[in-house]
Amino acid sequence: MAGRFAPSPTGDLHIGNLRTALVAALLAETSGREFIIRMEDLDLVTASPEFEDRQIEDLSSIGVRTTLEIVRQSERFELYREAITQLTASGDAYPCYCSRREIRAEIEAAAQAPHGNLPDGAYPGICRDLTASERAEREAEGRKPALRLRTSGETYVVNDLVAGRFEGGIDDVVLARADGVPAYNLAVVVDDAAQGVDQVVRGDDLLSSTPRQMHLQRLLGLPTPEYAHVPLVLGEMGSRLAKRDGAITLRELVERGETVSSVRDAIAESIGCGPAGNHPEPFELWAAQWSLDRLAREPVQLSNFALSVETEDDAAS
Ligand code: GLU
Image (cartoon, rainbow, N blue to C red; front, side):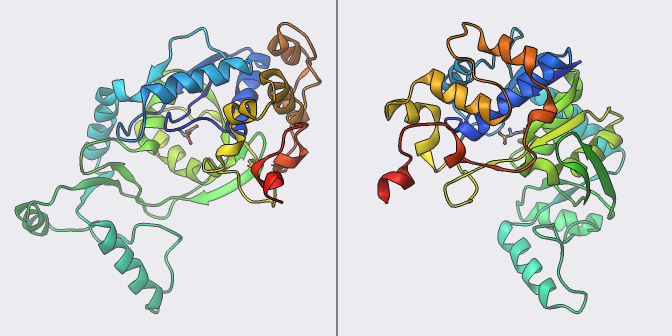
């Protein structure tokens, strides 16, 4: 039994990510699970070992640590290929030769058509039923296919520990890119099962992807973990906190004169932990007192964090 935090090492973690990581670590600890950190570095163009080191350091400085080896998705392509082979053999995957432009054009055309709009961003099915000769034609043009999941309007209910009941549909998501790199939804499902993860805590921007992952679990014969999708931290005006709000990484706050422990304590207080003060092992202290029902179900505002330094928005006004 294990919980996990699975960041993509493509930049510094902002305090919203660190907050989610602390919830993940505390929930694993208080439910008697091991805690895994997994680096989701599938895209070697955007992921870097430097950010991995910085993320691990930042996580550690707020008390989020693992005694287990850190796993990197870039080292596990073989496992993902096996799952892809299985889905191809069962007829649940098909090659897709579309460019982004072709997909966009088809979606726009469908919006004008009498049958109306497709769900947001859903693949409009252009390559779903190509004949063998249509495929051969595209191959002859030198097109390299991505691999998509074949779905037929299934819906899944997520009984989320934080978000409650969520019902969502699935679409023909990409399983592997045309350059062979496996896609996030596939890799995450394979890894969670392979690593014995039965508790997934992550930002609630991924709640709508969970039905896709549950579908893949079903097709691959893998168990479904329990889920806790944590509401995001919002910026000053109630906007979603994004990575580009560089002002609110831990490192930026420290540069502005905040101490690591004051940021750590502010993050902890925002999820319902009492103040750690000068306690030498705040994580253990928090774990002894914390439970998931202390976590606010609503997104929290950055301005509610008990931090004394100015954020960029304050400074500009
Ligand atoms: N790697 C994903 C991210 O950083 C999170 C994946 C997950 O927790 O399932 O957004």
